[in-house]
Length: 157
Image (cartoon, rainbow, N blue to C red):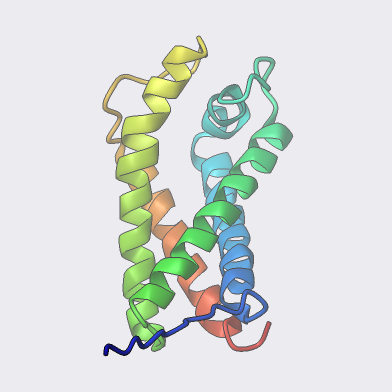
């Protein structure tokens, strides 16, 4: 005779972590968007909206909407990673946020974006790969703000 033991693990999506990820992602991408606007307006006005055929003509507003949307999605992914890694301290979350910013820079900005912009025929298509130092700064700031907002709100929303 044999016995079977079943275990069930449940996840409550009403807990704050994914909501904090969205909020942190939007905050981080808003700060990053402001930096891009000040440092290199064509990136926000042409390159980012070109991903979805929303430019040309240049449209900083469309670029910001796309950028905030991407930031929110990446924020949810950050929240999931933070939960899987069981990170709760602000310092560890900040470290993850900075690392997340670097990872998004490498994977999305430096590698995926040039290919995507070339595929859609954007006039703002950068060379491949595009390891631009200002973009690294923008993405590290994104990750840092995301992590700070996430840590401040994860148990509150």
